[in-house]
Amino acid sequence: MQHKEFLALVMPFKDKLYRMAKRLLVSREEAEDATQEILLKLWAKNEAIGQYKSVEAFAMTMTKNFCLDRLKSKQAGNLKLVHSNYRDENVSVQRQMETEDSLSWVEKIMEALPEQQKMVLQLRDIEHYEFDEIAQMLDMKPTAVRVTLSRARKTVREKLQQKHSYGIG
Image (cartoon, rainbow, N blue to C red; front, side):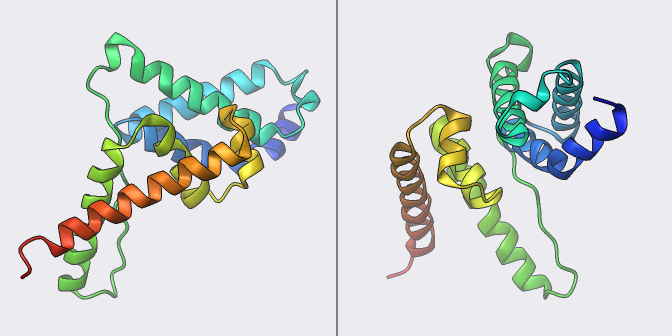
């Protein structure tokens, strides 16, 4: 496969690789490094890349595994889940502060989720993958993906409700 063909194949989902890496790693720099590593590994496999049913799913699985290996390594002992801040300049300062507070709480809640629930939540609700694709990437049955997602959403919802009802009444 030539360089241009390879780029045409991987560029449409490069940002998804980055977002997955950023969800699992501590910083933009770590996520960029991880994404670069995955792209290099994909390029190294470029002769065989056509054999995969979904190159994107294969790349997402590689990203997940690479990031989890980084998290497990001794040198990455201080890494943790982070969440991007979304800003809309047209929103009032008060509303923006409330939104940032809520995002901060969701981030904290997600940090406490088991690793598998974090990944399923990221892949389904952020990246919008289908259940079958997530099952393939995480080596799970689609029904297990649905159950894991349901549990993760329920935990996030309950913790947010606890936070918002705290001190009222």
